Image 1 (cartoon, rainbow, N blue to C red):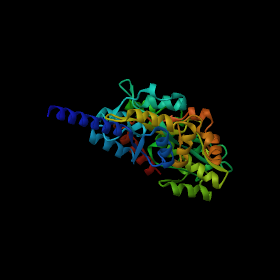
Image 2 (cartoon, rainbow, N blue to C red; image 1 turned 180 degrees about the vertical axis):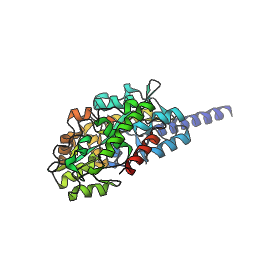
Image 3 (cartoon, one colour; image 1 turned 45 degrees about the horizontal axis):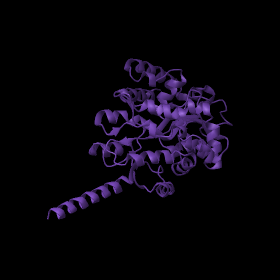
Image 4 (cartoon, rainbow, N blue to C red; image 1 turned 90 degrees about the vertical axis):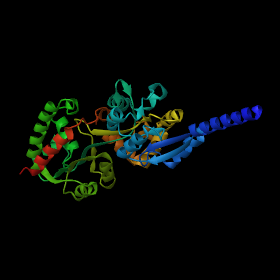
Length: 355
């Protein structure tokens, strides 16, 4: 009886260990559409023997899912870099990244440093960069060849020929173009208010130039296609899409810096497959693999040199818009402190109402 009991306990322990091992060989990835294309997943599974379970999500859902489980249920998540420290401070849903376990040489250095800075909380880094994109200028170079920065949209000779949104990115962009640093003022509401006051005055002064404040991307692209608008503040992939149709139109990284977002790799606090998570990060950051993700997602990654492997037309457009100095000059969105968006909303309302 004793031997049978011991044997039964041993078998149970062995089965439990096997179950845990099997579980550890599955990577539960919480990510955006296009960031883990089937072809890449199959290549990773074949190379490592690790299965990948992909759950597509967005920032709000990622936070909600991880908050509900205290950081459980997934092994690797991909929140935007400006949505990490706030959620971590409030809900404790992530664990720090071990930078010694990622291959830093695979990353564009300026993007890695920016993301480390913007995801650091209490001296610990919680994210490294993956997919990124920007807003800047989309310009018809035949009609507005001297539009190189956001303030150029206010040149009187472009009266009725420009467009941008009445949203917070426009406030940020104009502030940088006017020689101010709004991100540096995030922690000082009074200083930030002074910046907003100057930007408000400029945007009201600029109103005669605005053909329309765009709200939908398709509407803006059609305004540029038709020639009604010659220059606009818009996103990079929109400019490259138009460039395929009309070589005169393309995305221009402004002199004061394009505004950038980055979706990251972050470890949920209760990850059960941490080794697999680091293997995935290092796998997908290889230039040739990263180029496959660009093809699927439509945006570039922080993989150094990956642009050399993307489709030839897109590679040409990207390299023309983003020489290295333009990449290094991107202004990456940091987390927004409470209260700032309310201030910005009032400014935008006044600009809209101004005659």
